[in-house]
Length: 272
Image 1 (tube, one colour):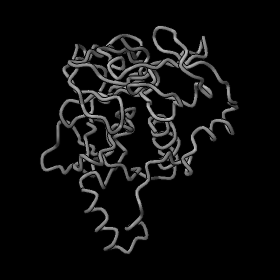
Image 2: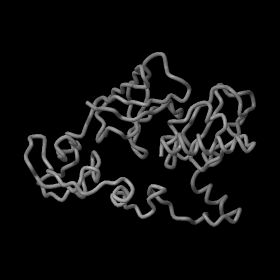
Image 3: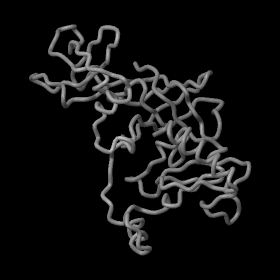
Image 4: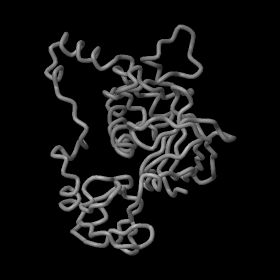
């Protein structure tokens, strides 16, 4: 979602809209944009598409907030972005849809990837990614073989279900060891990490000149955890958590906030 928003919606689609004479691109994301500092009497939306500093804010409806997936946007995109439903709750949006006779008013919500409507992620990767079953050992940290996996690409860090092995205590995926083609599993306590390094880091209002006290999260629906953000050269950053965070996985996004303001985000490179 992050890369789609950055390169498809807010690059290709936005550029097309501007080329056609449009001023804004409006989407159905639950998020808000605010000019900073706000102009006198200015409402949060719409905002004038001109140079300035724009902040990306969480949605009013915290349960539906989608600012996480917009963390790769910058000033140029936000100057032309409208998120009209970000100031409403989900029930209010449904009520408006009914009022205007829209057929989506009672549509059931979906958590699936938009291009995999049947939810078969493994099948999608097999069909379009050229991946084939590649079995290998399931091992613990000590190297003891506990079973056999069906291909590392079928698993994710923190996964518990679908491992196909029996144990006295629940086991979770700790690591995908591509060199050995081994799936490393362990206890919930072994999932925690205190710090991580991120790459391809984007700061909505530009890179900070010093470390920041933030809250950060590594999944769309995860809770915010207090952390200290250390900006590094080459679009990298180091994040040190106040308490261990479970199931951080290289490749997934980490997003930073200060209150309702989204500071930025990047992709996890390594963990400790």
